[in-house]
Length: 115
Image (cartoon, rainbow, N blue to C red; front, top):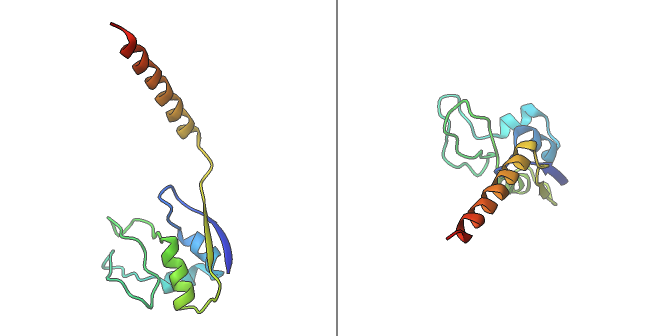
């Protein structure tokens, strides 16, 4: 299995990214996941695909790439597992924030030079 996945800003994988990485159906990923409708954060289960901790049971399931690779090797028996995380393209918001930061830094430097 050699998969390149895009990730969210925290570097975690969505159900869709895991589905693509494991070459399994969405339903399979949900069956593999260590979840329960009554409890949003179950104890670690080495035979299941363990999602990251959630604050709310309605939060989306997100998986750490290392957990997906461990599950693929140890449970599914996939021999070669390579998961690459790509940085998402910079958004307009990020560009704007970077420009604001640069402007604030230049104002700060200007104020420092004043007596």
